[in-house]
Length: 541
Image (cartoon, rainbow, N blue to C red; front, side, top):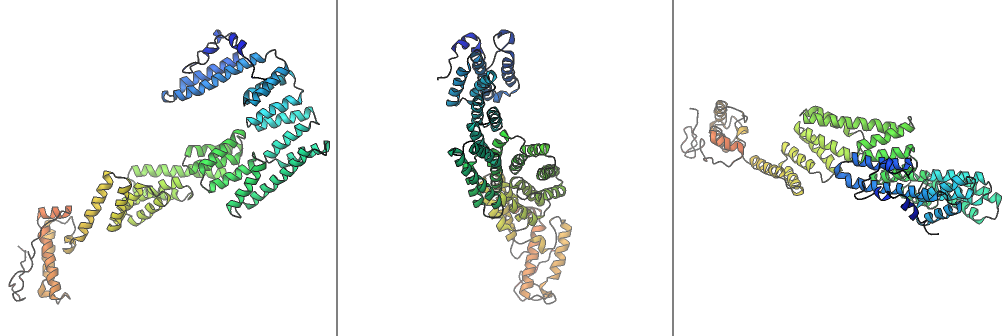
């Protein structure tokens, strides 16, 4: 029969059009709707008015649409129950069947429930409502109605058959087997029951094989066994949990979250599903959801070892991470480095959070001038996240710090190609400048002074070095005359630059400077012998 005509009811509720209207705001006053039962009206009013009051404006449109859907649903139910009132069971039953055929399973449940109120001794009515529950994936309610139908009629073959199939689909093979055996007791030639017994055995053997394969053979064999299970038991919880474990091993964390979320809608207290979903959220670096799921698992089973260990680990790890970030913000590099290092090794499989932890080590070790350890930490970061530009940047800085200039420049240019920022461009220029400075003579090293040495110290160092490496003393220094002459020339050149304020400043900046060749070094006719080749001019003044 066609879906029932609710026109009379709509006419009766003259204000029904005001329940839901654009933009889905509900204007309801209990005193203005005397013809509608209070509970439905209050639910509708509370649902929509609460959404409008609490939701941010940015999300209001989306929430209004959801509120609109719920509002119309309640209006529909109000009209439905008004139509049902006074109708015969036959009419209600036909309406329920029509609802099932058009996919209106919630309405079908409502219609069958009203029929059951009029006749609660009919096994058929309970089986029909069970079918609607199955389509709504409310398997527990479906099994309950099937059980009631069998209690009402202990020889109802279809009741046993439907319940057995549903039990088989959930991998409750023992209970399903009892139902099929009961059918065969009542009718030994029942072909459906015999066929179901064969499917049941296939599912049972496949599940046993999948469990036996886990961790002992290639994952592909376990997946093949699970596929065989799902062919005959699509709602098998044990198989879904095992599949989720395989997906977790494959790092398909989003898939585990989705699959276990569906399972938990039907079984909110399934501890293993909560645990696996929580672990996936942890690997997705969602601390809040991870703790929430582990906490829920422990609420249902306080002694669940894995959930207890994971909850403790998540709490400790994120606490250390927060403390490390706080210390880093205060430039307490040593403490930050220690905390990052402690957290890093708590779960090496947690790629996302370990990326952040290794990057923290990369930064803090660079600040501590632990250049080699910093490079190692940066490489660990890049092994987890190859495109992490910050890790490449700090690796380049650590290599520069360790005087590995060629590799530092290559690394910095790599980072700049990935992300063309001014900071990275300046880093490339800084390393190129360092290369240039490294290629020139180190005047401070030649005079055995430091960049912070004062003018007097530089002059004193020059005098001592000039006397020490005077070509006349070449033999006493174990040098040949040409070697001494070259050494003395470098000493004189270094003094020329470092004793001049402007030249020294330019040298420190890495700018190009001109040095007079031979100044302070070799000229003509130096007294003390070297013929007519060179002359030494000492600046001892």
